[in-house]
Length: 164
Ligand code: S3P
Image 1 (cartoon, rainbow, N blue to C red):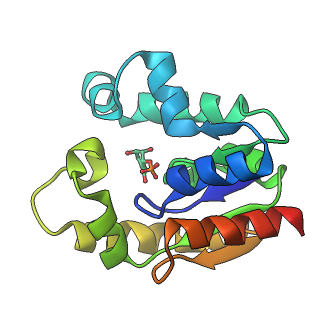
Image 2: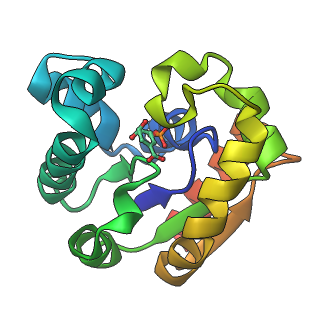
């Protein structure tokens, strides 16, 4: 199963908890890219550029084994090849989150190159979401609105989706 959605939607936290509950392995494409490169995401972005980051991200998506819980970095859905791989391992759950909620959750934007610029993080997140919302919606087999829920509650929903 895959968790998709924007930065700050809770994919990594919920994915790890859900995997534990379900007794499955957990994969996080951001973590896989960093392990592979031996660099943090901002370092990869600075040294090699976004294009290289997206290539490594595509390799990470390809190497996630079936029958696991996986969190897809927010931008994975931009690549049709990634979308095809994700769609082939349902359920695909979109953790849908409002920009203000994401902005409050991401805190240190220094970890996220797309937000590391002057101006309001919430506005940037809103613009990025507008570009991607249709892709998330089309790819998702299920949508969980996370704004009013704790990580525990989102996890319970995800576990129940996987068991249904
Ligand atoms: C990105 C989301 C980040 C990370 C990178 C780019 C994006 O992952 O892959 O900073 O394009 O939305 P998270 O969604 O796990 O924060």
